[in-house]
Image (cartoon, rainbow, N blue to C red; front, side, top):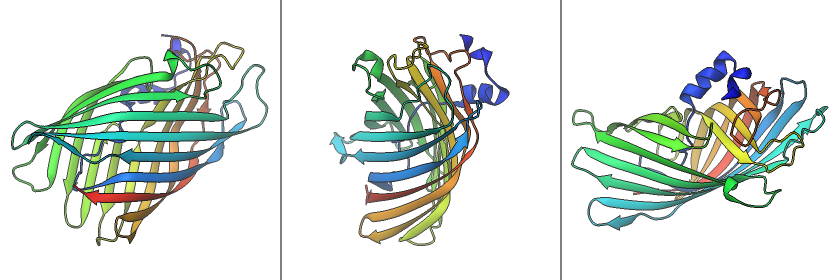
Length: 302
């Protein structure tokens, strides 16, 4: 694989820890968001070639009601859609066309299987479509993924669960296998929700109507772009590590509003060939950027 041509040490680290997309996998099911809609803006920042790139993101997520199959098995259907609207500014090298819009459409089935009083198994098969939809739709638009995590309830600490597993995806390279380690803890005053290396969240809950905290995510995805560029690129790959401060308030009943502000780190925007390898001289490191988002969500206790 010729990605070594342009990897810096930080990207070697990224390759080790990055990741499958497992955003809809919620481990703290005491109160879950079954619908959310958010708008985010990432400020323009400089690419390594001197031009600038900003992006607006619309993110929609829906989890259907739980289906019980016997006493020990539960199913949820999960749907997600993301739209990325890129704003490129500056001189562009001949033949390079930055897609203005990228789309990420996902369906996942969350399967929760009770093994015994202490152990539960979560299995999440996913079908993901990622493309700019400028070329004909085909098999290269499909990116399957699968994750399995076994969760253990602590017998000594109420509210504590931990577990481990693995996942497969086409989010970083053609075949990405990632070990997973999960920890969740819920108390009357705070909660911890970690699925490493994908996400880590700490939230203070001083009341039942508002909360605040900090979270970090590792995000990467490959999008099919056909042959829009005349230098042979078939895909683009984006990498972001957003770290932000969050605050959420209950508006009425199950309706919540959430705001977030922070920075995105370890950012990349690369062009890949048909073998999912970064094309020589067509990978881009992007400087860290400020970002902010606003979201509305609906929550239910399970």
